[in-house]
Image 1 (cartoon, rainbow, N blue to C red):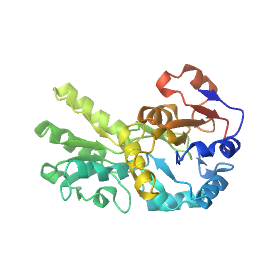
Image 2 (cartoon, rainbow, N blue to C red; image 1 turned 45 degrees about the horizontal axis):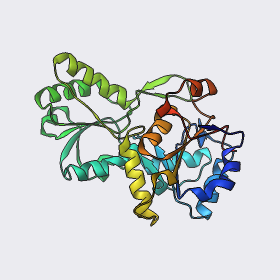
Image 3 (tube, rainbow, N blue to C red; image 1 turned 120 degrees about the vertical axis):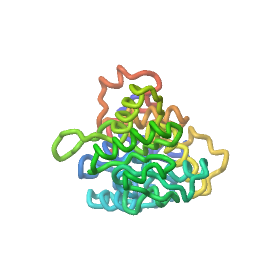
Length: 290
């Protein structure tokens, strides 16, 4: 772990030649609340001008990439939807690998507009009385009737314990920037269901798609290669992941084999770094982007 006094932009000028692609976290890295981080917009523009391969990774499965692009633009960061990879985008390889195209899944909550599950080739069911017709449950976000949905999902897995429980966003909670309070994330709801099932004697392991799990990184790595005509044998260490979370961005990048960079403009401070386990430690630490 190298703790640098240089900003990321200063360091990047002299070290960009060592990398073939970049992945960015969004909140705490490029965006603070509803405002763009200093230097983030100019960095993205330079990468685009240089045609340098990059994507933005997010655990926000509640908004489609089109919706997320609009939110970022309002914050001052002009990013096309096709430059954003959501945790729910990893439904595409999940559906393909399990030969589920055209199959029906019960969806709890929101999965963006357009819907990520439908984009991946699934049929979406929202009526709890029809949940037994489904091949599995996808836990989304947003406002919905938790009691009826969680009860339906719990009883579904009691009847069909081998069917899929898919969780695009593994986070237990999310920060509400406006109020400073916390919202309950999809991962928290999924683990609540699993805890009840465990008490009943059924062990259920969710399939997590977002950071720090490998599905989103695997999907991003694949589309970096195919979309930008990078070599099929591209070394993972030639991809730099820049984020603000040790538990999500850094641990996920390290476990996948990417080079990891941390900015201290989000949820991580120097004290967190000192206490971090080896798998949570970034390769590089920057005070900020600019």
